[in-house]
Amino acid sequence: PTIKNEHMGVDDLYKESNVKTESDEESRFSEVDIGTKSEEEEDTGAQWREVKRRRLDLSPEANMQNAEFWSVNRAHIEFTRQAFMAKTMFHLNSFVDGKKKKNQAFALFLREGVASPGFNALPTSIDVDKIAGWSYSQLRDALESHSEWGSNQTALWLKNASVGSFIIMRHEYGKCQFCPGRLKDENGKYIGPVYVIGIITKKVVPWSAEERDIADNKMGEFSKHYWDIHNVCRVSWRRMGYKNTLKDETQKYINHVCQPTLQRICDNFGKVYAGGATSESIRSDLWDNATVPICSSEFPDKFDHADHGKEE
Image 1 (tube, rainbow, N blue to C red):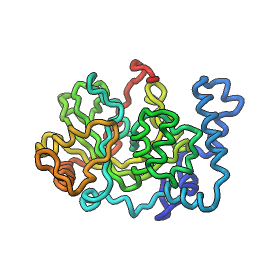
Image 2 (spheres, helix red, strand yellow):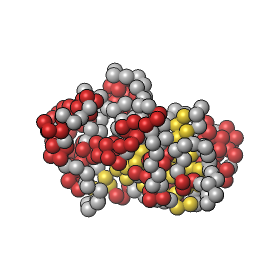
Image 3 (tube, rainbow, N blue to C red):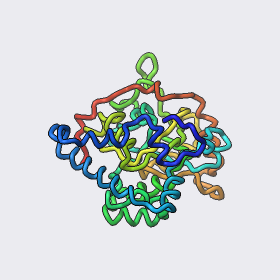
Image 4 (cartoon, one colour):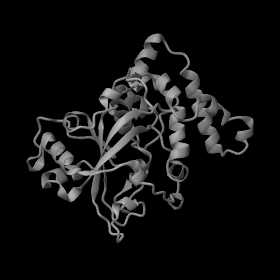
């Protein structure tokens, strides 16, 4: 979306977005459309309408807090060494199968300029607008009451992945069937392992029209056949580096944090890690060796996920 003001509230973001409007979304669930939709799609539509209905009755204080939490402040989007050395940083490993040596999300996330830890959608019984006022622990506990799977990481993502935070994502499998062409040379040889650095430019409101547009239209081939995408952030993927150019202690640290799927990294500035690495030395090494500029248009690849079956 085009950002016209330095600090935009959540309602402004909907207006400025190039995605479908709420009226457009409502039309998708007209009597004419329902007849052509699967049972799963009808259930999702009903969930979306219920969440939207509850969002209409907020106090002025809740509205203000909510708008602040989901707003976009351009001043926070600083892709600089100084910001990289200080701001919140995540390692993201979504939809990676180490045993089968495949990474289904890397090319997809870079192509669409997004990121998500995966896992389940935010339960519709949890009001989206309460997230801003809850602590991490409160949100985690609410998620655990529905399902313990991924509750820690989903809560971490929704509460702490904010505009201006950095994300490190890796690709390490040369024979991966989802390997983008950008990671192969003119002879088809794999150039990796590589890592990329991105910066979060927007937190997409769960169950919003924008989230639906990303899942259904931008990432439809993945959402339809493998996993329904939820809890999305828009990300500007800017630089790429080669893992083998990193110092040994940095590589050991990165290998160590590859699980769980989402992890906040390099956040203990007083700690010395195994091999003598520190948060400062790891951040510096990652930044200095990510010398290859990248953009989404370099990753146009689309892959067939149908043969992999939809996860239950």
